[in-house]
Image (tube, rainbow, N blue to C red; front, side, top):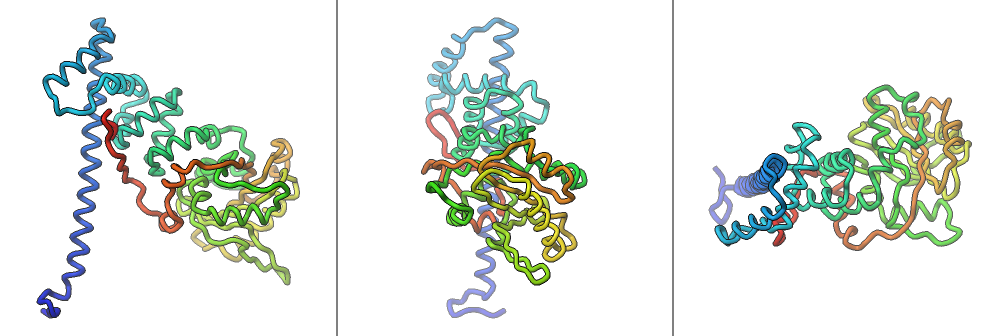
Amino acid sequence: MSKSINNLPDSYPEFLRDLKARIQARQTRAILAVNQELIALYWEIGQQIVERQETAGWGDAVITQLERDLKREMPDLEGFSRRNLYRMRTLYLAYREQGENVPQLVAQIPWGHNIVLLEKVKDPIEQKWYLEQTLDQGWSRNILIHQIESKLYNRQVSQAKSHNFGQALPSPQSELVEQALKDPYVLDFLTLKQGARERDLQNALLEKLRDFLVELGNGFAFMGSEYPLRVSDQDFYLDLLFYHYRLRCLVVIDLKIGEFKPEDAGKMNFYLSALDAQVKHPDDRPSVGIILCKSKDRLIADYALANMNRAIGVSTYQLGNLPLEIQAELPTVEQLQQALDFSKYTDNPTDEGEM
């Protein structure tokens, strides 16, 4: 066995890297396990309080007394203030009719995330949707707040989307692509001057690419701007090209600074045909196009897409300013493009027990 000059085996650095990875993995699992046990406890406490209030007629005074007694009997115990005890009760009431799997889902996100859902989202179906998206997308608490305040549920679940996915794509791909489409896209990290053109919008998005990728949603990997396609003796350029690693397809985004026009759909149909013939891998699914415009008439968009044989969606966008605390939470382009594991949640506890 060979040894280095400090009498350590040559394989030691690899052994150290592997050991560090194992320690970090175990630490992560330990954090998640502690969180799951804590939320399970909160759920049980909330359940016990509600059941006694409903069957034995206990009033709110019991919660106040419970806080005092717990502080007296267990002075080092945190997270059992009167306010937090009410939250435990609210947690159970919010999800007890949602199905057997919901308590398990609730336990997979930190208590701070649960508090946000309970206090900012009142509709039970919408609460469960944000809960599932948090698990799927790996949102921090600040990003979850931003998504709620930007009404992501309404933008992504809206029945007013304009697309032809149902006729252009087989099931279940058509449903999956529809779920990935939003209308409108909130580009509140951009500001454009009066009289801006498509190129200005494109350059602004490229400068804020990681923000744009977050708004697009989990699964998008950036492939390039002004992506070249040569058909016969002519050159064509796609504004933005992405690959969606979950949908297993290329996604073209064509930018429009003004209102959607019917000819925009024909142009996108041509782009997708050429892209599938020249760029798409044989194992990939059919490419998808998104026409991103300032405004649209839904009826005109629906008519324009009615007989197209390629999957095209028409969405609008809104501009604004993204809060600084949200910008700090955004992942890097490299993190998004490498499709890192988004299952790690690490909010710090507060004096209210918000883990």
